[in-house]
Length: 174
Length: 174
Image 1 (cartoon, rainbow over the protein chains, first blue to last red):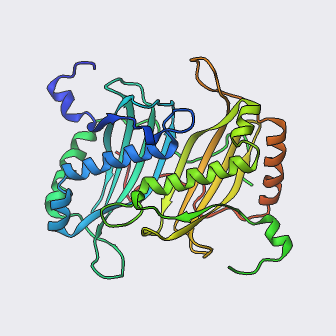
Image 2 (cartoon, each protein chain N blue to C red):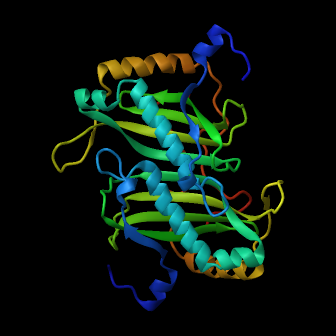
């Protein structure tokens, strides 16, 4: 990995997950199946939740959790079983109830992006009845933690695969 | 399910997958985890591949397969373990090498959409060397099968969650 000075390190994307590609995640060709890229990104979001105080204890304390509203993935390179991959996470947006994150997948600490995933997450109150979860403002300590990361990440460039829509180039939608 | 006449049934989205939400797919709250919605949609794409002649025998005959380039998911409702869900699939676009599909997830044969997933798939030649897969035109029989479905699905309205990008309303990207 390229050496980063202290000030650069402060604004770098967070390393949120690292581990090997598991046997049960690959397809008939021994490549990571599309859905399991998203599982890895989902585990990275779990790790981000731990970091901002929405781990199991924090969810119990606040009665709140995050619900994924929307997710977009670009698949750039295949990944084989047993390869150790790393997820890096940049905050793209934040308001009172919503968090927009951008994950990238890498082999170890290499720079090449294997896949990119943008997620919109909604803060919800976990209901104890049958009404289902309802949107709620972030808990104070959680919001403070998110704002600190957001301030640092505002210095980062807008990433390449953010804000994309699926479309077939050169053809009209039918 | 609402009764459909023969002519309506011809143009209806294909039912590509049906089965129960499995225990290993749910999170700490007993709800289907975000990544496993995509696994169900991925299994639906596998079923579509079987239908158009890209099952294991077809992949062997043609030396070709589909590679997911890009995927967008909207999560509309939570789903609990053991619920039997169904995926319906509409073709949105097709060219010589690419296929754009739109999946929706439902409880059984009910109309309510639990989640929507748009995928862009690329036809690739499976390499036997280390060069990795390369884009290739669809095999003749596969293309014929896809064009027949595409013709039928052109009569369907453009679905609600197609062509979306992730964005935080009311805020500027940072």
